[in-house]
Length: 474
Image (cartoon, rainbow, N blue to C red):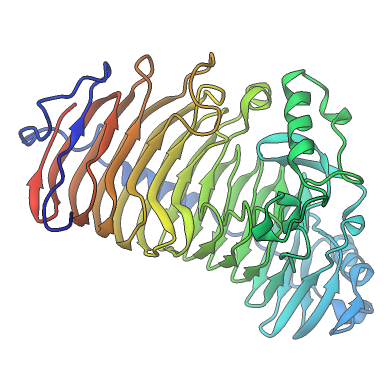
């Protein structure tokens, strides 16, 4: 259907078609409720600073590490990090070579620096990631296998350098636990489904977190990098490959800077960066090529999210490149504690395997809110589904008592070459999506009619699709 603008369906809160399709352009309508939200984004950027470290240096090779890729260097990493912490902090240096290790635990005031030419190879034996640690698994708190790099309650921590972090996950390690043949699972093999069901039941029943112990004999994959309850966190320069699950996952943390990181990992649930229930987060200069959402902002899930009740807020994404992935900039689906103040600008996206540019997903089990999302100056070559997607029917869908509250989605200067839908937005009749604006946007080829159901306050200003100007107010 390229070359002609497909018939659009604009539906109000009642689900009725507005004007039978195209409406008159909303000339003179305000583009945004906030006259200049990008000043707020600039304040976040200035406020989020990289931590500074003393000039002490600790080479892991001085603590017994061997760069042959087969010698277990776990004790050497731990000894170097402990020595650095005892001196009041500094840099733990991983020199060129290949270093095999189990999980790494960071401590306050320690920068784990991976030199160019250095690769940290993480052991794939699940027993190495025990004892279980306090963590979150898809938005639910529990004790589970330790993340590959983990910190709890730490201040001033970093993973830096231009080397590589290789989780060594694949169709023979970690990924088969997803329970799908394309990731190496075979009938009779263990899989995560029963444990994930059990964990959700524990949360719904109010089982104390201290009693939600998984790990040995269970099959929930660990995250790659997880700072939990941390402050002043820097992840910079490294390349992350072959992750068991989510790659960079700050939880309940503050002042987090993810800068110039490359993520290339196409396994199940391989999200690139997932700030969860965290405040003041900047993701800048990064490249994402992932098996799931590139960036997914989260805030806890269902009953557990309501118990913890901590939002993600003040999130800035800028100067990033997005390749494969489900969504480029995504919010949800674990967003029960709420998400507010998301700013994304100067982004480049393209891939036939990238579903959406801006993706918001929730349902009436999640509840929570998403308020004030701003996207501008984004160049997209190709998408497989929709430029902007807001879905209240994700996973459990409607019919539960916790309707999501989504309002204030503002998009400016977005150019998309090819997409199926421009807008794919589905609210509920009793919980419409509110206040969505597009200004100065161009969509060269859209091949299907938009889906816009139960949306109030939709305004398009200076928007062209398939070469024709369009505009609407719902």
